[in-house]
Image (tube, rainbow, N blue to C red; front, side, top):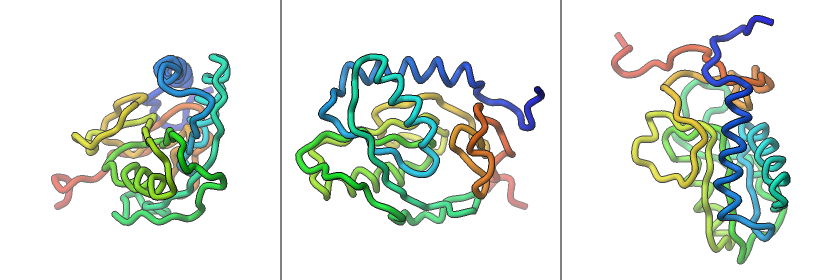
Length: 181
């Protein structure tokens, strides 16, 4: 079956990188940690990573935090909003935050501050994709570094579409100030 969009990261490459990340995280976390997936994009990544951790006999509790800064636009509004909060207490616990894309670092920074305000004693972040715009913004774990393209699939979307693609595809190249006439 021909892919509809140019493939940047194949399904097989995603699976291999998930296993490597699980090996890396297995040396740090244990069953007492909480894993908080940032909705909606991190869903497939969180599911695959939790399965990989389970294969290593690690079973941290999974929760969700729905943060939004894009809505249905192709660029971030620059403002992070909580759409739905976590459902379990995290006071006195360590938390691993999972996100699909790390570009500006704003969402991860907001999530860390939000969870620390709820009493998390340590927060670490893991994003499956890091884009060049992230620059030196701090993050503890990265799946794959990708070019600055508008990505879809594996949880990433275009106004809600294409999240279910099993690969990471390129919808189009992001516009930059250099591209603007």
